[in-house]
Amino acid sequence: MKSVLVIVALLAGITLYSCHSNSSSENDHASENNTSGSTAPSASGTTASMDVNAPSSSQGVGKFNDIQVGNTIDSKMAEQGQEVFQTKCTACHQATAQRLIGPGLKGITKIRTAAWIMNMVTNPDKMVQEDPVAKALYNEFNQTQMTNQGLTDQEAREVLEFLRQNDAQ
Image (cartoon, rainbow, N blue to C red; front, side):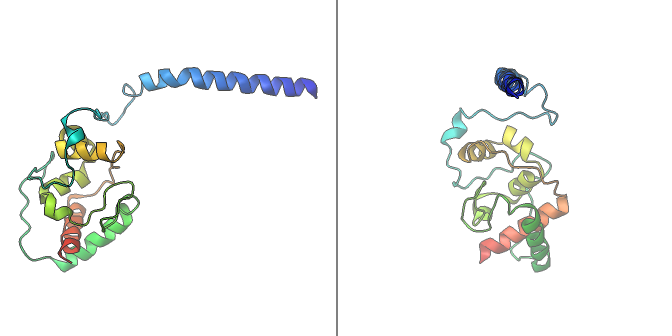
């Protein structure tokens, strides 16, 4: 029995030592093994001091440019967008000003362009890499990367319409 305890203690010690000594080499190779092709942006730089709540006319980075939405809200599209939002977004975001893992989205359509919002929800990895506002948000929210939820272009447009309706209330 005593020898079993000695062997278990020895194995536990070896395991702890090997986990500790490999953690730095795993971190050194993390960017080499990144299969998505993206790396996290630096926390330093001009975006660290950017006011993430300030209005921006940026279109963002991606396929959406100069999206025209009109003055009236398509209630059916907004309803579909609310369903998408509740299914894919509420783990990290609220439709209120309340912050969770990510920012509260009340008022987002007042400070971001439609194209920026659609680019962010369809391709957050590229946005955080290349868009100054998205980089600043990444830094503001403890360098937490928004997860790509695989929204289609139509779903992105529906979520945008839901956010527009939410901001109109």
